[in-house]
Image (cartoon, rainbow, N blue to C red; front, side, top):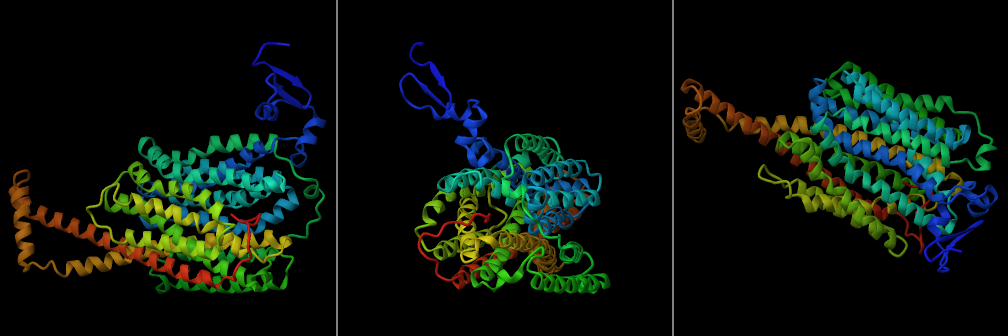
Length: 556
């Protein structure tokens, strides 16, 4: 025996000579296969916290990528000779591809095994990230983003399924809290990291950063994640090829119309009318197929449930609200106020800090307070913050919106978990996978529609405000004459006197463009606030929940 502070290693138990159990050492020290199986039967001998870390990495990578890409949009547009509205396709193409895969993730996981399917998705996502960074044109990066969205669609639902089955029921809430903590950190790091990479190196590194994370995730999943026996022996029905094909057609048409409609004046273009017709036909066919074939890709019979139907409407509207702010707020700081990507990332980053603070609070209140009250408070808080965004002007500094941006994240933490809980409250457990797939698909579709609507509104409202402001800048306006005279006198000191007057008019015109853009962003923020206030009222369509309701396993 050795002196105090040394370890006495016994099979299956490790303690120091003080007599106290040392659980950390015991959990990490190698054990025999029988001892490991006895201690961690649900994970086939692997410490469940290693499983948690393994499945957290790909989900963290996917959430981080969305936050990083939103900050780099102006630089992507400039590098690839695209407009800002075209650059937003980088977000919408990902969301739609992601939405297509979400309903099918449950079938693929049962058919090929969750571990194998998760590994495949991580590999696809990582390879697509390389092609996004190396893309020489907008068309190539959009194809890579579709590929990336297809790979990222199943990362969250599959990761959560693995995580929840790796812990006994009594420890699942603690596991989900740790998992959620990792996911909440991504929006905190994403804008700042993306801005720093874009300013210091290039926007391409905002995608290259996924490669080492993806490689580490593949190694850890291969080493520590195993499929349970019921997955290995599961009998899976035939894949619904028709339902999947119709889903691809209508979501693809929706994507094309949303992305290209603004350029060609929407229904003023013949191709838009044909695309919308194909969208409607495919959507009706998909609804009919999903309703008449309950064992197909998606079972729409879940929409008979009032709570689930209400939740699906709200998650689509929430997706619109969230992705409007994710896409528009960094653009506002960069395009209107002239911030760099890094500065814009620092300004919008506190949203994640708000979520970080709110997550443990909602974990405590979720089982004690009527979830409808929490939802209403969350939507009202988000709406108030969006209204504050709609009161900005050109004199704001980097800290002016610090509190409302932080409160936005805090308010959203009061929406996500209660909304998922209320939506799936009366859904049978055997239908949970189907219900959560449809639920999250509608969130992404709503986000894609919201981004398209916001970018279109910014372009059109900016032109409208420019016409309104320009109407007051006639050559006979004495105020304009006075201001141009003062500017011309000032510019004459540094310019050729003959160029001073045109320079003065050019300066005023630039200010008019800046004011027009500001007013357009203000309009979008205020409309977002109205949408959030509507959602705050709509939450009362939910039935009153019973006491002690906890978040469902498949919700995220």
